[in-house]
Length: 390
Image (tube, rainbow, N blue to C red; front, top):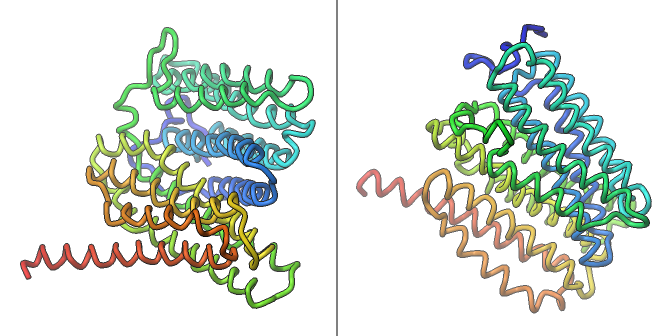
């Protein structure tokens, strides 16, 4: 563990791109939060409750995303950066613990657990870099400014009488997402220079890949917890196996050519770094919906399927395909039409799926995902034949 000066806080070009053990431990906390979000959505009884839960998930995801950018720009082996990771992990535990009751009298605890790590991260970094007028300090100051702005709305929304003021929390999330996309324009400092994004390392690409793979495990974790306290009826077991197959299919869809993010040019890498938080958010919402749908299948595998559950079971795979396809498009400058053509198939099933048993709905979604995977294989074979001149 190193303890160098201000300049040494910035990741060196020759530093290891492997995630540290502390970062992996950090991921586990957030994967647990995602599993909890999936179970809450599965048990919620209205679209409004589902929307509120997803809003809180946006905040949870942004904490992970911003922290991963931090550990890519700054050296995670340095004590101040490790302190940032530890404080953020504690905040993540707090947000996860209060998530189920954030709308029922504990909104202030959720807000404090969420905003504290963001503010402390900025204070720690700005203080550690105060001796030099360094670009790294300016970068930390920009992040601190915008999260201080959003923190006001988070706290105000939590201190409103009764339930949290969801419009204020929505505005807070919007500020965080828009300011990040706009490169944190800050008074007297301007925006984060584009060339700083182009300096991202393979470490950031690996962090996203590791997290998505861990998150996919929630698709089988959630139904496992459910089926462990249920009877092992044949339809329920069929739903459990389908959830496992769906997890493997989504894994295959994600890892297909995912290594390309590690071998990009500087400009492409900078674009990928700015885009990845948003496209991976879409994919992760898809994972959350699939896991919630699997929970409902284990709960009631037979009988008619309510429309909200149909949307979880069919919309989850659709969102994952869309998020992955857009990320591919921005990296390779090509639209993966062979994947997108399967989306209408999922859409066509929606009007009729309410009359199907839930186990059949998830099986149909898994078949569509399998078709997408097969189209990937056939496309690769066609390309290989074209390149060989056959």
